[in-house]
Image (cartoon, rainbow, N blue to C red; front, top):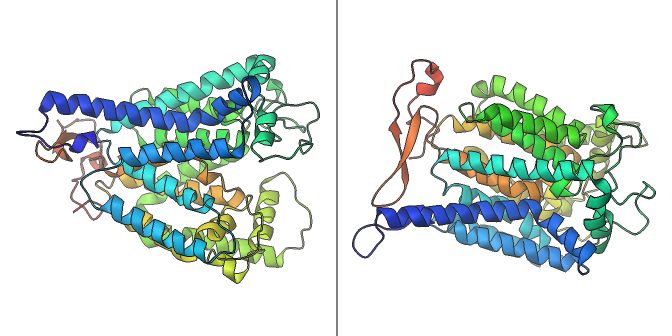
Length: 444
């Protein structure tokens, strides 16, 4: 918003535009860090001050999305058109359902709004600072939880908070005597550094799944930003988060990112577009052919659970208008179709894959985000958790308007829009970093 304020008579001078841009960036930092930490804060309120309900959680999320929507406002029609079309489509979907579920609107609203917030960031180093700040917060709270667990639980009783908000039923925790989330202890022992004990640290996320997802995101951003300051520190933070949370799936996703980086230049966009359909087909084929009957806590067991749940969708469920209420939280693909419908999902996914980006270097991140989404949705619907989604989509938006390696962004004095200028050539830079911005990936 601030980067697009008019200049000239009656407008803001260069100093005024700079001050407003700084204020806008601080507001973005505040809303993203708030999205990251608000559950931890509400758990503290529930433990030490007064009871919290699901309504309080919903109101905070609505407020955060609303603030982000204001920060995303600009002179371009794209955001407004997409927002209006999406809301109209979801209104139609909800009208065809027997019961109103506003959460369905919220799920895809988070990536839309925060992505356009990210597109207002004209300097990729601002996104770098946001990522490093979030890592500092997560690791600091995580270490506090690990080394001072009794004090942490005395102030932030995780299990009581999730019971209060209706996510967990009373007596559902199979870790007797524990006040952590139901997956906060791994009874069979840790996968990484067993000497650290059975406790799986969840930090501000309060549950280890998001901790692992966040660790994978840090690794992904580090792979993408190969000229980032303190990049090695970011990789160390990623490892610390994954080890503290004993997030084996997060580690698996990191390995998948390495493979993606090796091949992404050679894969056509249409193939990336088809990847979710390929995963769904594999889930259906496995679910209809396997003789497995029981779930196990491993990758094969997660795949079986996701297949079994996906097959519970009826034909109406594929279009988001089913009258049957089926729990699909452990099958991200099934949950997505149930909430948004095949038409809406197909349209949003097509926009994400085929929309132009400013630099071919942005596809370094885009390909890993596709990998992240498609793998994550096999095992859960945590892709839609604002705790990690806000930061993810802000960074994706910032990458899409970034001029690329070897170039710097400047601001057009009339429109405030960022444009690329050739930076001084680095003799050590690779030939790939000197590619022109004007390519088939560039914005027109």
